[in-house]
Amino acid sequence: MPHDGHDHDHATTFQPDIKEPSEEWEFLEIALRELLIDKGVVSAREIADTVEAWENKTPEAGAQIIAKAWTDADFKSRLLANGNSTVAELGIVFEGTQLVVVENTADLHHMVVCTLCSCYPRPILGMPPLWYKSKSYRARTVREPRAVLAEFGTDIPTSTEVRVLDSTADIRYLVIPRRPDGTDGMSVEALAALVTRDSMIGTATALQPDGGRTAA
Image (cartoon, rainbow, N blue to C red):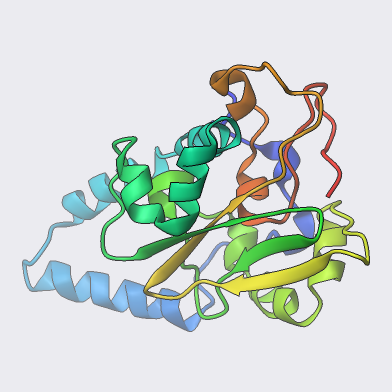
């Protein structure tokens, strides 16, 4: 499937060399997990199965949402007004948090970060990439978003406002990237293949039909 992996979307600047726990929240997660296992609340096997299920999720669901929004104005209006109820129309359950959907335009470009840990819309994008969780990305995106975008190969015109959205425990964000030019008449499935994980975070733009990048 086109969305099983996006190697071209990786920004090695934010790819940690060491994958061992280093953040406070990671150590807290390990301690809590071990406590729950010791208390018999959950088994290690149940945790492993749940982790595997989440790891098998891909950005494909998000790409389908974006492609439908590009082709169905009414759906996009509902999506921007109420993300949770609108993705539920597609059978996607988004419980416990609010899904806020924003749209990138020629005048406004959104990018998403979680400055506290790694809050991320997992039901529609799968597991967050390592760079999204890195301290460098989390800190620098707020201070110098244009520089971070440039390191991803995404150059935003000075006339375009860059707005950073900080995910929280209660809110997750999904970015509707700009639809590539020359895609009129393409099917929803073909359009979905142009939507990358990073374009739904805002660190990249959607792909052109020839594989190039859409102008920001």
